[in-house]
Length: 278
Image 1 (cartoon, rainbow, N blue to C red):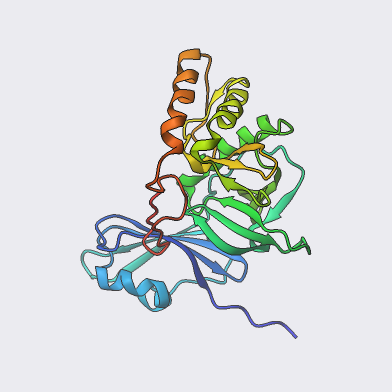
Image 2 (image 1 turned 60 degrees about the vertical axis):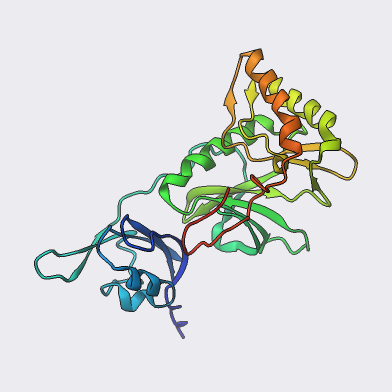
């Protein structure tokens, strides 16, 4: 007996609630992800608000269960006033730096906590242990560049003891969109008293020929044994200028006394609005 098809469901969105700019949606339909763009002006604010729970009745009918398309662009015909959908099977961008042997289907990741817009604590369904992990994944095409940058950095940092352990690449139907990391057990964010050990860790990173680019206190994780682990490398860049490296070192003292929470991940986040403070 064939199993019933699961109804499509909304899994991510980046929305302008007043409809003044394009809004973007990821919809999971029977283990296949569809990407829907609603062009600016096609829906009013009330209809966009209804998308969260009732998108199938807001949008024109779409063949969600068919594999012949990945993308849909929704516009409103200026003459008839009706919504129209243009379907496409165009390829989406993917992370190109594939260096780790482990490939993980995004559908095998079970979120346990949101940490930031693209970051979540999770369980990997293939791992029967109780350990939590960290997944970073692009939701939409323009976010793939950040995953690409970090994936390259984790390749450079493999075995250096500077970063969390890289556990594998996360893919969506073969298209790599992110990666899985160890969660530092009993780790904590850096505090002002950790200034010297954070400086030492950052100098080690500089010694590989890079600047971090985002040295807020939340990107320094302190293990119980005092070892410092750096995270969030999407802004890292190659650097051969000692003055730039020293400027980054000098900025640490001010960053570690920061109390606003800036850089701390999930400060004020509503995936439905595509808003994140960090």
